[in-house]
Length: 185
Image (tube, rainbow, N blue to C red; front, top):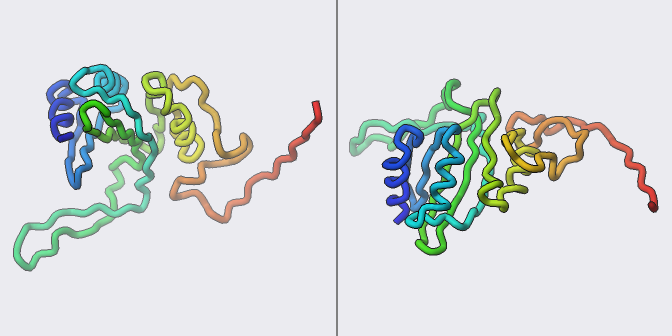
């Protein structure tokens, strides 16, 4: 059902859709960062798409993850070989799950991000429900959202150093203790 959404995305946006996949009922489109807002607005406003339910947005850190490289098919061949992720592939991806209640289809949008360029346009102007989820990605992974109305930490205190859900965050790291002065005023 959602394969139609992927086909419509490719037909409408062409090169801005970097790749698509449809496995195990998960329909994913990798979108160029520069086209994210335009693609999202079209998915929301086009009557044939009507993506009116923003389910979630989150960040993925691919550091240390293996990739499956397919091998030639033969009766005795292993379906694939696991190998380390190539250095030139993006370390992070912002992921957005959108659904249409009226048409009962869904799509997952991914925007790949390099470690030294963790900026993506905000979608909280299109779907206010993404406001806090984008703040969570900012706090936990360090992804900045261009145009976000209130981009600040949501879980960690302001003096916290680093982003605790990154895979390279040292689990033994000690954080500065912050004394808070509370008054009855």
